Length: 118
Image (cartoon, rainbow, N blue to C red; front, side, top):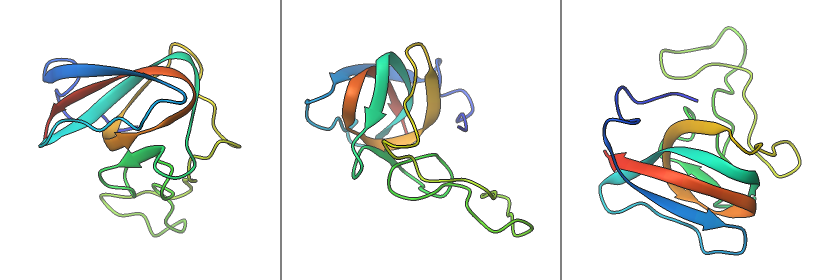
């Protein structure tokens, strides 16, 4: 996952704790989640579980990031990526994932998500 310059941890302005069976979490207006730390092994809802601000740049449940054909890579997107699903990704406790996320909905486990200004 990409890290946005100095957004983590210097520009983090808040955090949200969430567990499975909770509502999706959404950062405040003009903010994005820049990282989340897994507290108990986590999976994400198949739709709306891990929504990236730019789906082709950050691993997410809506689209496969970096999934261009080999040899077709650009400055903003690579190749070989796959979409995050419950069947191919369980994030272990202790993992911290960086990106730019606009919505997170945990299907299993628990996380703390950190947000920063866009």
